[in-house]
Length: 159
Image 1 (cartoon, rainbow, N blue to C red):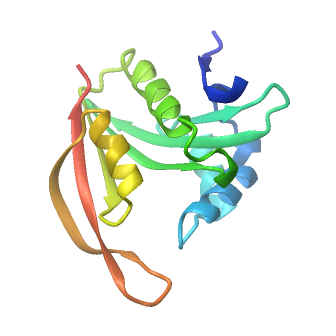
Image 2 (tube, rainbow, N blue to C red):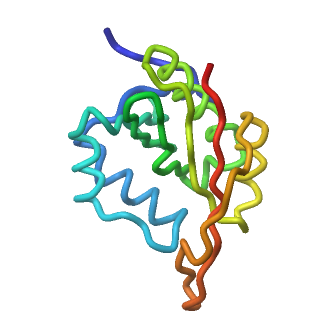
């Protein structure tokens, strides 16, 4: 059974495949100071415990993706990134909605994530999706100037 969800701009969301690793690494680099290498994405994409959700067109041009890990009854958003030309168009929300819909078919009861406390757009999205701040991790992220940033740890029930 092919999983398929609708996305803005005539795109759709479907499961990621190992062949997507290079494109996910490219998009990730555009959104994060320390983008993950293609090999890391290839490893995640090959592992059933870390499904990826990609927003793409019919020719599989990828506009964004979300990557999660589920262990027992907990799920974690490992990363989410949207190509700069697709930002601000509801793609992050569509990706998260697809993740939540898929998790309804799993034993996961709660989802966690970490987000840079300065990433106000992402925090607004997560709060709209029902995530609440539960703690923080000082010095979790590296910044280009050598300083470090605090990560907010957020969670929401999936039930």
